[in-house]
Image 1 (tube, rainbow, N blue to C red):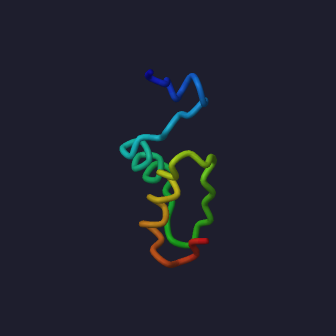
Image 2: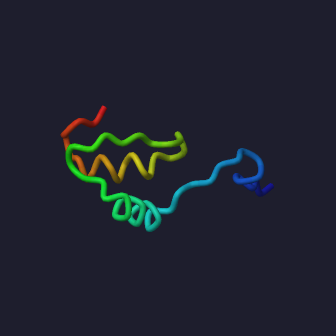
Image 3: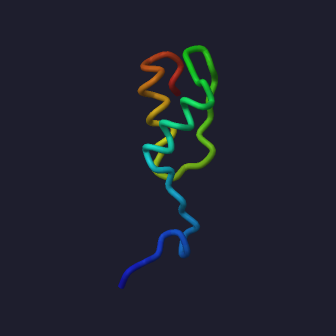
Length: 58
């Protein structure tokens, strides 16, 4: 049985290419505080942690 995650769980994952565009367009950089808007798979948080390194990731 195939489960449609979007329909069944309202799960809308942000694709990595969209995450990259989001960070670029938002001009997110060192010193900024950023929050992941949803739990999902953490694609946005993961990309931000790569950008920040060990500078304020909690």
